Image 1 (cartoon, rainbow, N blue to C red):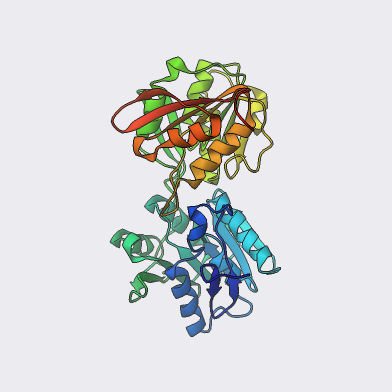
Image 2 (cartoon, rainbow, N blue to C red):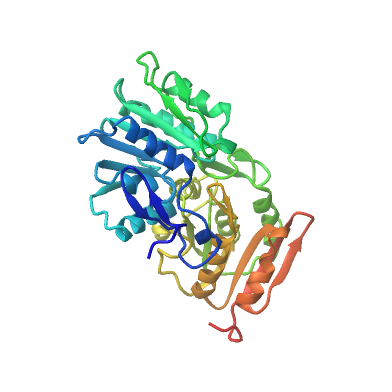
Length: 392
């Protein structure tokens, strides 16, 4: 049964769309699209686009509103979020949209030329910059390029990036607090080399960090990560350690320095994060040696959902409290629940987070107890241990 909060009506299709996860959390009280999706599709219909033979590139499609509506055409869905890819696939199946879509991770490049490019403006300018630079060889003078976003997140710098890397750009009038950017492709614009990944040296922890465009805290050590690292003199020993929501992999790499014989896993839902962690782990300046079996332990997963990990001794977690522009703790809660299942008896979960998020309440509910390892005015490091007294 379709509900008003999940019924997405466009000139191209009527779809029942849902966000991930589908567990009754706050995320599922939110729509799986926004006014920018609607504005983009309505504009296409008014312009009688796409043509039947058009080849489409859809970038940063949150939950499949664009890809699902246009799935009768030749579509490539290019995204840095596995969650977005999974949501799009689930929504296509739910709505019996069977035409094949090419799902392309952000760490891969598109192939061929595209007739129509639709871009949902991402949260980070760096990601948009990288995408526009990478896009340049795959468009020509006839390519129609339309970007969309909510007005409160759009900046002058977004339009400036289109003009810098593609060509002259204009904007639409705002409607339902959304706006479109129309960009041309100009021959005089020379192809640029993406500056990403960025390379930095963090002297305070003696780490060389390579970081792709969409990875959090690109130019300095994240405060929460730094605070957890300060507590590593209390870090429990573990044969099998997971860096969950690994980002650039700093927590896992520093745990490996301290416990060089451990088997280490890096997990994130961002393709760019996992690739950054891989590059940093195998940088010989960061670790004297790496175990050969660790080469396959870099996993793109929605929390632990796409893994079969079990009997884990220690999980390190600096959880996100938002997906795209939506603030919510459902990802952290999912991480905690799946961590509990993956830990062995006696295994421990270490979490760092802002004090105001109240993670200790959720951990007490799940583990039966929660220990404060350290705290200051902004952050807290928590430890929860799985033991025989906890209820599975």
